[in-house]
Length: 506
Figure 1 (cartoon, rainbow, N blue to C red):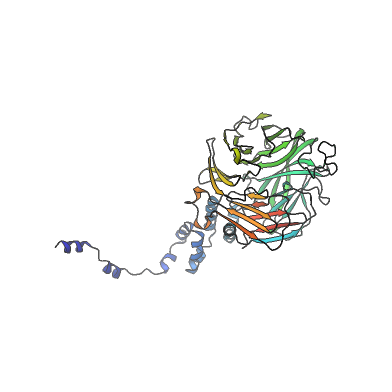
Figure 2 (tube, helix red, strand yellow):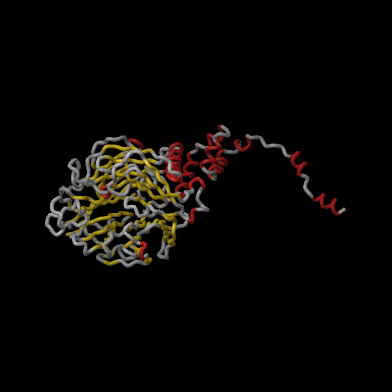
């Protein structure tokens, strides 16, 4: 009796299966368009593509502009370096947004699995004495700015190249400061203007050292700065030039146009400038005198400065050049000797106090870990955690920092170990490194711990170190390559040839 009662309570799965009639395949496709689009917005991009194979109507739904606008916005929160748009989001068609999204995702995956990217060499003007600070690859990876004392390039001018167009290209300068001082190395910094309605860049130009080719004696009046490029004293009046570059047109017909914002008179400068960084309204540069006895980092709010140069500064200790990066909300991260420090720039009245020495609100001693190979990546805001992420390379380790938007202490932890960190030609990104030397191309990818459970599986980049060896020897680069993380396009320059490396076209 007990067994019969217990069996009576058991569900009859066999009879239930007989009563179920299969739903027609067209039921899902017959849902209203608004509901289908809403369902698609919760799908991964791979599932959206697979739905195109189910029926003609689902294929049509998958091409809705609102769907790809939502997918782009979601991708922009998942990726720290989302694609850069040349015009407002609503001005793109669904097909254009689809291509932009897939190109960005494919470039990230190609870099992660170390696929051989498309490498495009092209001839360039003979610029055997150029340095890496003569080049700036603007965000998005399309526009390259070059300053050079080359005979075919006018002093005090900035030349622009469109890397989406074939080479050779005619020399075309977009900025003319009017300063024709011969053989002057111009330092250039650029940053995207987040407040502009369309693609806009702010560009800052500061004269650095002057090239000389005579004596090898540092104490002599005609010191050879080609051999010792960092010890020549710039003893003239210095003007800081600020320009705004706006995009006119779209697609292959787009051009950059320059408009001068202001010239800031910095006075008589008995220093040589180096390491110029622009982010938001702040300009930071590292300066030192000829004897290397006075070294400091100067901070200026170029947006508030009109004709006067109001600055704050941070003294630099030791003989090693410090590494630093600006955070968009007005903070500065510096590695100097055995310390890594965070400074708040906007905490002072008037944003910048003239000739005030800034003090860090957070620092960490590093002892032996902070050597001359230490470097800092660009800072990227993380919309999901309301923090800013920065990667820091110290010795043979790569660390990550999650910096809160207030002045509370940041998170500092190890991301990966890599023997590539000590290379002087390495580019450190927020989740990758790139190093190109002659026949070898070395890359490293690493993932942040907070991404392991949040990021889409297809974008989850494993921690790995990879090496590609090429049969042909590539020219030596002037310095670290320029890698645009919004497009995974790499640019590096040799004496007689330049290279563009695209991971997005595989």
